[in-house]
Image 1 (spheres, rainbow, N blue to C red):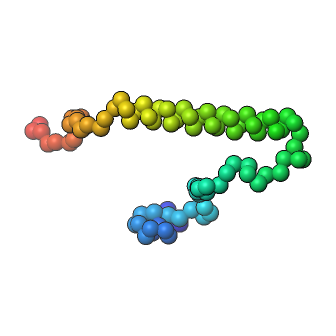
Image 2 (cartoon, one colour):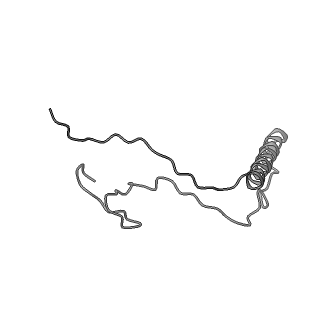
Image 3 (cartoon, rainbow, N blue to C red):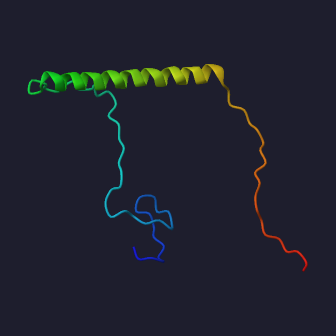
Length: 96
């Protein structure tokens, strides 16, 4: 889109947006799909299989750590509301 023109999002029709020429990023999940359930590892070397096992174990430990932190957060914190004052610079007229 040329500079200075306002575009419309091709997905949600929002004004002042431009479409990427190609998909910028796409995130998806595949619920219920097991990791490596149907993989064939017969062509991998023993060291490659060890690396894969370590990767899966690291991911599993990360999931455990995240779950522990989330449970701790839920048990030891609560959401409250606070009113805060935010300094803001404004322009005013003053006599000369």
